[in-house]
Image (cartoon, rainbow, N blue to C red; front, side):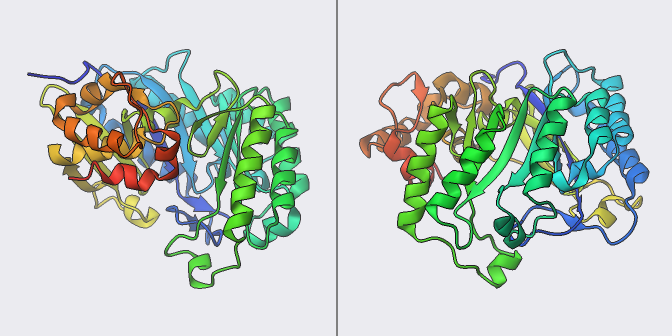
Length: 383
């Protein structure tokens, strides 16, 4: 018996791997530019990569497209337009397809943003990280406060009425007053969405090898509590652990990830999750991480291909869905994993007994305690 939905929502992720320089906190697949940008060659590769997957995603339409990186705004509007036109030729976008581009304030000007808008981008994610110059310097950012505010103004003037700001807190030597002022300054620019998250030190980063002094727990706690109050007072709703939005402005692309929808990833190091509802299997793909390997004509774009075992699906689903503040309808578990909800009934009961999961059987939703101890909650569903 096939329990999958006929088609899972499908997103497209496009990875642009280059940056001007690598930030000391960044563990993403990004590479500092050491030679001229291989823009045309990379666009050609992206389109070939995409076409190789057409049989996997036939007769579907993307609910969202996301250009991430790295620094996608290093690419010209002409290149972004060629990518979108090439994809649209094979799988036409709908009028409601959300198309986001990540932008670094240090890499754009008026012509770039106007050109991105004309190319088909309808949502921006601007990586300001902070609006305080000393913090930006510590984070290794190539922009300052003035450039960040200017980038936001340029985006608005170019006609972008839907944009996210990436903002970090818990920065080295940061006080609660500094962090809350940063948040208030960002909100004064009237974004529709805010990714507000605490700096964490990740392996294989410069900060990991030379750790900075981070604020103590009591300061972090004060920032979180007071910051959430400020966000609510400004009309923002928290819908995911670190994502806040104005009403009806949630990020479609990220929501699809968190609801365990499907996504095709093209570009160096991009990941995919594709469901074959007829064969009742979920396949994960990973592309070659380094741009040189990805662009090597002697290699297939795919570095790794894995069919996800059924035993791992409950944990994979929960790892995403439990990040959502309001959870997901219980039927989504069956439609997106192909498994009966009854197969995890003992685990759901265990989580509810620990007061980590809502008692309502129609939804899978963490309690306030569940969000506070999210790792403990998700570990219940490990195979």
